[in-house]
Length: 117
Image (tube, rainbow, N blue to C red; front, side, top):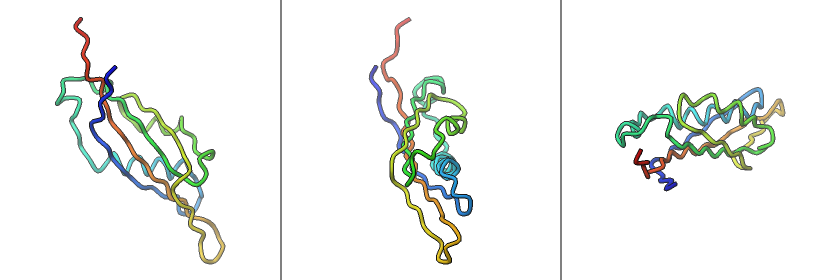
């Protein structure tokens, strides 16, 4: 396979009150995706399901992210989620909680070698 990167999209999401790392991650992914309308699959004559989607999430507590729950965000393609330490936790000044900030990088690729069937 000749996996060829076509697009990088970046986003940020927060969980202001509930300290929910999965929800902050979901918002970061949506932020990256919903700001663009890309017709790459059509432009190259591929079905949308052929999109290879690599998602990198950064949060302070990677183990608190339910990666499987994030897969449902993608209407098509073949998403793969990886979570690493990153993002930011911001404590509220009155000590009443923490705001979670997640960062997402969404990378869309295609196998540019077509089969000759």
